[in-house]
Image 1 (cartoon, rainbow, N blue to C red):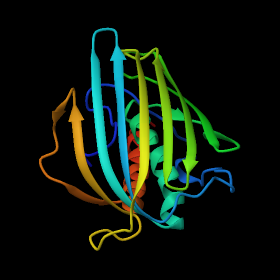
Image 2 (image 1 turned 90 degrees about the horizontal axis):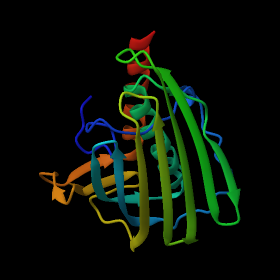
Image 3 (image 1 turned 120 degrees about the horizontal axis):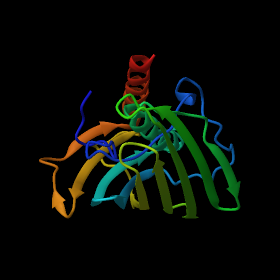
Image 4 (image 1 turned 135 degrees about the horizontal axis):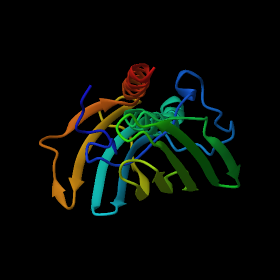
Length: 215
């Protein structure tokens, strides 16, 4: 299913990954610091680079969190990467999570044979998420894609802040896409209401469908 609001799906020919774990639960640490319930704003900015192109992207959205949706948001970030990897015919092992004090780190690796080039493509993802407080979270993600038709690197920073109580338009798990900019140009025609659980389900279905085509 095509969806213009996907965070970083490689419609521009670039990035992201993660799989075989698509059908199983993630091994998230049980004691990840909890974000406060309420309405949060997420501002994610980053740059993709390959041999000939540099693309700057920014996505801003809000999400209504309760304890369950807070946990689901961690899965959402992983499943989105899985779907992107599957579009490159790459499948990956489970992400490895480590929690040290207030910082959650993860490493993700994937690989797959490209039918277009006959080469083995590989990707590695490193992410550090720091829980500054119950009302503020910052993260940084580094992505390296190798041996694909076009090798690329990505680096993203995310700033997440609590705005207050959820308003009537969003229930726990509900998301509102506010901005989606590419090289400074707004590509979003209107605000979009989404749902973190539905997005997770869609990403998993996309991943399975793409990899089934490869078999």
